[in-house]
Image (cartoon, rainbow, N blue to C red; front, side):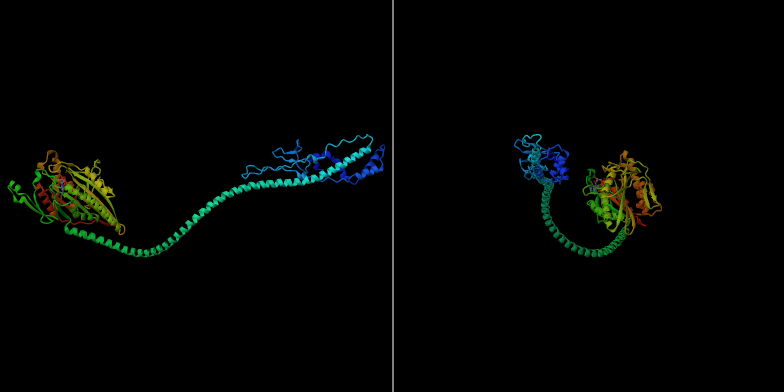
Length: 636
Ligand SMILES: Nc1ncnc2c1ncn2[C@@H]1O[C@H](COP(=O)(O)OP(=O)(O)OP(=O)(O)O)[C@@H](O)[C@H]1O
């Protein structure tokens, strides 16, 4: 029997070999066994037949034991407590008690504490409770009465009784065991289910936890969803409104595009017209200049401001019209010099005469067409001539606060003009240089420390250049103005009898303009030279230390006069080379330039003769006739 080794209680009560034999020889009666014994042991006294029969009848057919399912019992220990309860210990923590005399089916299970909802305590698998001591064959048997050793019959009876009892007991146990076996099956099943249940519980708790989290998230999402739905509805409405607007805009755009196409055609036509008109304007502008004369002379009389005690006596000045000036000495001065009428009165006629009350703005209004000519591709020269203290520097540079002179106003106008021309596809570049001629030497006023050898060159009579002269590119009116101010700082200045800050050099500011029309590819190259001449002075009145520079100034101005006279007389030889000033201004004086001479006149009687000289010189210049060409090329 396989199961007996796992059930030690049965081992002691039911010796296994006998049952095996009984299983094998279950049909041999007890009588046959006894018979065999007497055969083998003839010395034994045979019992009466009735006894043998009795014995035979008492023998129960031996039923083979049912195989008991193999169970692990090695870990199970039993112990009996004082109150007759058996405690089953599986060497862990679990215990169960079984009441004495309870059958296997009534074994009470000590149920472990239920797992807490938070899963802190885990349900332990239940161990199978051990059988009670009552389920085992009783070890102690009531003491049998003493039987004589020869009384085999009694012995046999006793044994038979014992056997019967044991069989009975065995049968009961068998029943109990089968029910225990069933129970064990169910118990294992229970444990399995319990384990599965525990697992399910754990899983359930996890799922429940997840569910709670998900539920709260779901609720949040629901809340979000509601607000988003609301927003979506609003946005959708807005979207529809925009869609309508877009449709309207698209329709409008289509109309506008058609209009644009039409306007673009018209615009091209107008641009072409503008170019034609611009061209025409340039031609007309030049024609007017030609009619007026390419060398023109303006006369400006300075006011008697800031005069000394000696200067209080002023000439008699009258302006019959805007082109004429009458100048004469006062009666007192005529009587003082016992009067020579020829030198006491003179009338002059110029292209324009500006009285003492003329503002800088009024003067520049008349000069601005020259700036336009420079932008249109002509070489222009404006120079201020006059004796020292007559107001040349004031005219050319002026003062701050609205009293700016010709140079700063020219700078402003140039940039305004080229900005306006951008509309008709003109692009201009502006460069500038400033030099002075002092004692017949050239000095670069934009880099005065360079001390380089500077020479005047004429390019086949077309263009005048100066070697090593700094020519700065200028991007704005402000930049150009700053450049002029810097140059003015380096100009040679000294005090004269008539001017505390007298310019002792001729200063030449030249602005180069080159423009190209992106549509027509026409290029114009013009320039404007703004010259502030040094003032002439009576050499007799000059102190020794300034004599040299005065001589140089007077000489160069005399040569300037000679050049103008030669031009007026249309001489073959014009003495340009005799001074640096005339050599530099050759193209301006001689014909390829539009030239404006501003003769400045002092109002003081003590300067009367010098003023007369200046006015006579200017009159001669006015008579000079020249023809001017435009520097026009076409881009490839
Ligand atoms: N139109 C004017 N209005 C007011 N003040 C003037 C005018 N012209 C000249 N002046 C003043 O007269 C003085 C001399 O003028 P300025 O320096 O321009 O003479 P200049 O001819 O340049 O002399 P120089 O040849 O010696 O340099 C200056 O104080 C100047 O402010």
